[in-house]
Amino acid sequence: MSEQKPQSFRNHSRFDPWFHGLGGVLLLVNLITLIVFLVLHVRTEPLLSTWMLSAFGIFSIALFKSRLYPLKAQDRLIRLEERLRLDALLPDSLRKRIPELSEDQLIGLRFASDEELASLVETTLDKNLDRKQIKERIQHWRPDNFRV
Image (cartoon, rainbow, N blue to C red; front, side, top):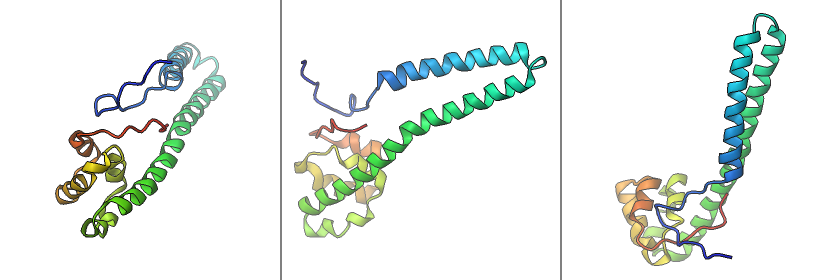
């Protein structure tokens, strides 16, 4: 088994070949096929055309929702995990300000090492940084290899 590359801002996003690759290609092929069918047969078979269009819509929604639901659950777990981590690592002055951090900011902070966490939280609160800005400022990346 090959060693994983250390995570960083540039390579931390995930690409799932089955979902993003095959699923996206199949969805696109089906969309093109549906458009061709509709153009050729909408006048001769309107009921079938309507049914195929609605089936494609339902399938598309189901595909995207099947990806969004686990991501939302993951974000809720990250929020809880980071609040517990911050409570354990931050000094009292910053610990009182944990509720001021948004979900987006907590998700960005999960990659920060324990050593730089306090200063990054302070900067985040003072400058109201968003997730991307937080990640860009991380010097010592703490990998998260268990996310969806």
